[in-house]
View 1 (cartoon, rainbow, N blue to C red):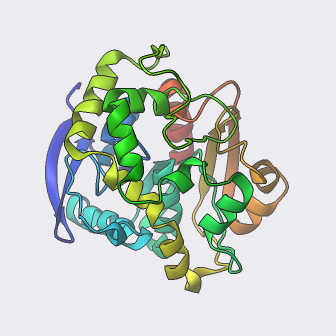
View 2 (view 1 turned 90 degrees about the horizontal axis):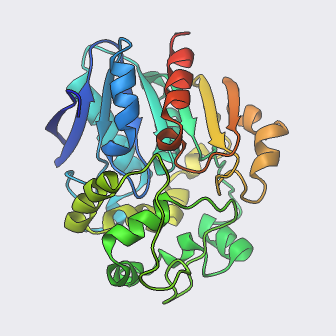
Length: 319
């Protein structure tokens, strides 16, 4: 794709595949679920043409990066550790880099800024707002209490179970279901019911997502399966236990946050109040801008690439 280069970097004993393009200050792009470096294809090309060096890895468990077999190898510390080792390898001359995250990548970016603010110049985070640690209740207990056991994050917990259901549906179908999801309500995956559509029902792709895109995603997820990506969700409670020392800690990095108004994350219980009534700014004192895009869903960087590219460029030009 338009001069994007690919290589493998050894980080902490795992082989990490990265896509990169451009020269200049590094922008580290961190993808979410069920995505890959490829989700950033529009941003890589645009920002590389504007004087930046775009670096987009497949995170551990995804794509052409190794997938450790143990569920507990996907904690926030493992993943942030991979990214620090990656930066040491690809940008040893840059003390700090720009970071862009989306979905799980946004959560990882919050952890990166929490653990190593000395390595981050500024952050553009998308879709997933900071979730301050609640010392009184584990995240999965909260999710089950609010949404019940059919909520997708709860359904992901039993090893092998959701993978078997996804295998029955077929990799390409699962990817289409996730990537075309535009319901602002929570995502439920009742046992054996898939995404609620009859088997074989056609899924109409939006203009921003082509069959060619699905074919690329599917070629990688056919190879790896979904286990690596789902293991991040299986470590939610473990992350909660391990991050106890950071209870109440603030994010001390300049931040711009972008979300679509149809995104299920923006419409989850308490999120709008947290963003707009002062909680977010309290926990992220250097929060400079919150952008809510109208009539835009969860995969906003693919749905509205030109707008997102401009938001990223305009923010990072300040530093």
